[in-house]
Amino acid sequence: MTFSQLLTILRARYKVILTTLLIVITATVAVSLALPKTYRTSTTLLLNYKGTDPVSGHVLAAQLVSGYMATQMDIVTSRSVALKAVDTLGLVDDPAFRQRFQKAANGNGSMRDWLADSLLKMVEVAPSRESSVIEIIAKGSDPAFTAKVANAFAAAYQQLNLQIKVEPLHQASQYFSGEVKTLRAGLEEAENKLSKYQQDHGIVSTDKNLDVETARLNDLSTQLVQAQGQSIEASSRGSQAMGNGGRDSPDVTSNMLIQSLKASLATAEAKFAMLSQNLDRNHPQYQAAKAEVDRLRSELNNSISSTNNSVANNGRILRQREAEVRAAVGAQTAKVLQLNRARDELSVLGKDVESAQHAYDAAMLRLSQTELEGNANQSDVSVLNPAATPMRPASPNVLLNIVLSILLGATLGLALAILAELANRRVRSSNDLLKVLQAPMLGTIAWGKPARRSGFSSLFLSQ
Image 1 (tube, rainbow, N blue to C red):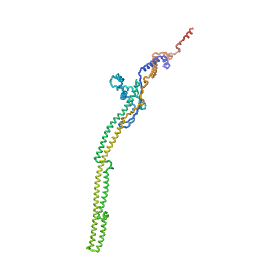
Image 2 (image 1 turned 60 degrees about the horizontal axis):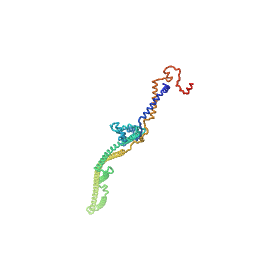
Image 3 (image 1 turned 30 degrees about the vertical axis):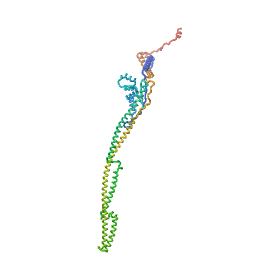
Image 4 (image 1 turned 180 degrees about the horizontal axis):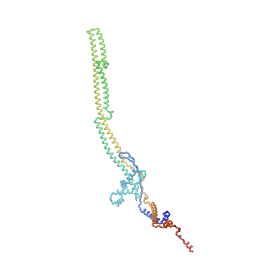
């Protein structure tokens, strides 16, 4: 079938096409006017999403926008949000909705659940592309109620979003409260152990520089060094005093009395020598001079012996002093070592107290933070554009339906015209005749309807 043949068929069957088109348009208009009107409105929400662990307080890795938005859309259309919206609108106490529930469910089941299911059928959620904005769309027959439903879902979603954020914080706060009590008890126990240990061992300070016993040990060590030096010196002097009768020892040579006796003895010996040359042994002067020399020599020997004995006694005293100081140093060293061991144990207990204090402070800080965040009433959801009462119904769209019915009616009319032509094929052009008879065509007669004649022209022709 060529295009010219198609035009010929459409020209011949135009009544079928027009009739079909009119029927479709009329039916569409009638159905559009008969259908109930549906109103559409929407609420736009902005999501300020962030990730924070309510227990540790650490900032988590940012969620993928697509996954987060999908999660929030599922939350908006959840039964929990719908139930909160039912409570916000107060539909349970509405007599009209009670009557509808009685007719629909015959009083069986929960009215809140039935209302929540009914509201969920009215609501759908649409996300914005590449943004944190979602749109809550509500559709219904009552424009005012539809707007209330959209706003109620937005408010219910805000409440649930805040509840989802706050409930973990409340649980974390309870957890930290218990931990704080446990850590406080541990801190008190560690402090009591530290205090008792200090009392039992008599340790006032853990600083070794401020320890009296260590200072005493240092003082005794100094005294021991001095005593050792003095003992060595006394031993050396004693050795010299024991050699050569002790006459060449420094203590003897430095003794003024001995030097005086030596001088007197030398004088007496010189006098005695002179007298011994001139006098006999029995002479009184000779015997007096000899007695004087013997007396001075005896005094000198006694003085030297006394000096050497004094040096020897001093050496013994110094060695005894050295031994006593050494014993005192040993005892003080043992005492300081024992004190150091006690101080080391005390340091461990002090570190336990410090660790318990740090843990307690950290728990108290997290407890304060979680309590502050848990008492916050700020949601991450903000309402950008609340739903307004729609003035015009969203459906049915009569004008759009008429346009669609024109396209459908024209298409259906063309199809019916072609089917009718195929069912009752006619010769409508010379090409059709050639195709049917398969014979050459000699000529064509152009035929048209006779023109209508007016009264004046017929009168003229009759004359």
